[in-house]
Length: 196
Image 1 (cartoon, rainbow, N blue to C red):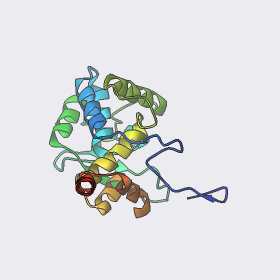
Image 2: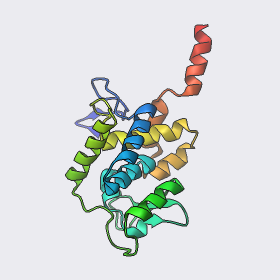
Image 3: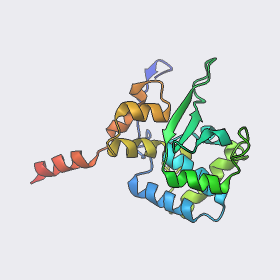
Image 4: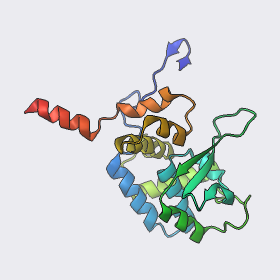
């Protein structure tokens, strides 16, 4: 990326060294807090963000037909790709999430948006669930931090980089490759051998 004649390398850390992604325990706490949320539509929204790694605007654009019940998948419209053709990517999700969406939302109207909130209101609601999950404030404690956390979780779970790229809707593999920067269990295990 080139900005004002300077090359900026994408990173999972801010210029001040703060982490930009929710880590594994924070992600688990967020999912648990979402599951406990008394507002069912907020519960499904938060879980869609956590389980698909989509952008907040992509989640808000989901309609009933975007939930692929037989496939246990969510069909996301890639909003960053502003070409003439529409780009849809399928992201597999747990069957329990699809069931919860079916229980919470009326999927009989194919063009009906699942959530009617503005982007800023959705952001505030997600931040409130993060506070319930006791996630320490910082650049990671945002919907974008959930997106980055999804990428990190996918890589640590052994998902091939090309699938992570497709699921996250990245045009370039270089963008997805930033998730390889995070130290995983294998790397820690190798380092521990060195310390013995």
